[in-house]
Image 1 (tube, each protein chain N blue to C red):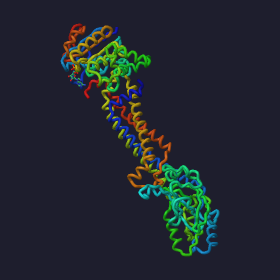
Image 2: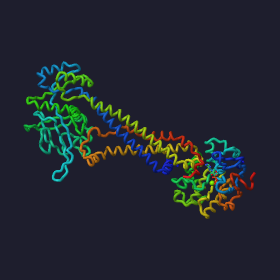
Image 3: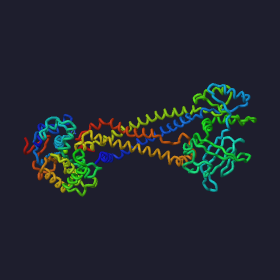
Image 4: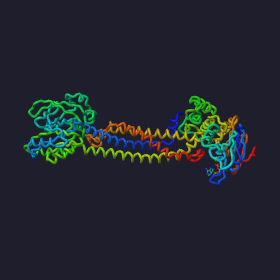
Length: 410
Length: 223
Ligand SMILES: Nc1ncnc2c1ncn2[C@@H]1O[C@H](COP(=O)(O)OP(=O)(O)O)[C@@H](O)[C@H]1O
Ligand SMILES: [Mg+2]
């Protein structure tokens, strides 16, 4: 009989306590995994955004109220930290959105909208198949939408872009478009980020981060009958200097059409990582307390069995090793259960749970799931260390057991 | 030199109850001792002292020429492992190990013997107590008599010099009682067997019957 088998047999003597121990550890680790993986996902997202060199550009809209374009451009160029000012090629901002399930003649159908934020004469939209646009900037594309882009060929319900949006980051999607004059054109969209179930261009992703700016800008554009959109790309020397340039622009009365700063979400990510560390510490400390209590009461119930081993000639060190392998098994079981459940919950079960029980048909970034091996490893370490520390803590109680207790009642 | 000599052995509980009161005795080799006495007379306590399960308040126990009351916890554990086999009234089998595994439990501590040999030896011991057909059964699946026989097989696992039995038939019917006593008698062929009981039937099996009263041991061969 190995130590392992012996420990299993001992465990069976206190099934309830063992189960509760495993459950407590598993629950704590699930909390730990969720919080830390989300924080890690968010941090990775923010770092990714910051790392993109493109983010050193800032989009500015020329406002007629400012004066002539020349003055406007000159002012922008004269600012500190500004390296270059160029007229922006009208960006195509597209996103693919799930309309979820729609009943047509009693049947379920999945629709995906390819939506463009702007719809002006330069933007050409092509209907590959499905319905013609009903609203400016919107094309309804059925699930079998297969433009000149390979990855879409394999689109399945599980592989719709915003569920695994990260798979598409960096990819270029080529579209054909038909403009309002019914002319056909082709254009490209580069996927640079995933936000709020939307695959968007780099600028669009920031626009979505700052909805207010988007709305403010739209107002200016639509309330001014003579408005002619001219966007400028302002190249800033360093990412970090973008807020300063924005500030200068605001002082001059120019409007940054899309703030590129990640300040808000960056702060949030920082806060999250701090909060997740604090919460993890609290969760683990609290679990340690509970498990200490459980193992202490387990040893209380084990007195007779421990005494039996002592009468058989087992040294206390050997008995301790037996208990050690038992609590390690408990820790491992808890870790395994937690990781499996978390993977299940945020994997295959996530979408059904959201849609069925909460009628949520989109997945905001914040709950996009990803496995961070560091977190998994830390959870495994915590899962084993918690019962181990608890056992060490209870060692005095174990050492007090005398072999004569084999004869005690109960 | 393998006999046990006890001298002035005393055990007090909480400095009030004197369960064993200055007992001096010699337990000879290869003899079946039956210790009888009323409940509360100190039989179990004496057995615990002999088995090093409890430390005496006073006195010495010399076994194999060594004063075992002076041993440190680890040495005591080793002494129990090598020299003593216990048999208890309520069998004390591990509920989640089979009869065979229970018999193997004390052998685990014996580094010199391979797992296969352990198994073979355990099987042999089960055969000795006529339980080989129950080797893979769990205690729950065994009758009281069978459990006690498994416990005796376990007590023999490391071929100890002494078998200490506390009310070994306390939970058994008459037939099993006889079976256990004759088994113990058989074992006394090459071991010292000390069985504590208030069952008078033991006098038919034990070579020496001693009486315990108020913590004092009386009988033939007593000093
Ligand atoms: N752990 C203990 N603490 C206090 N008193 C005890 C303890 N064990 C036994 N006693 C007392 O010691 C006396 C002898 O007990 P015991 O050896 O169990 O007798 P027997 O086995 O002959 O019935 C009794 O009075 C009993 O109450
Ligand atoms: Mg007794």
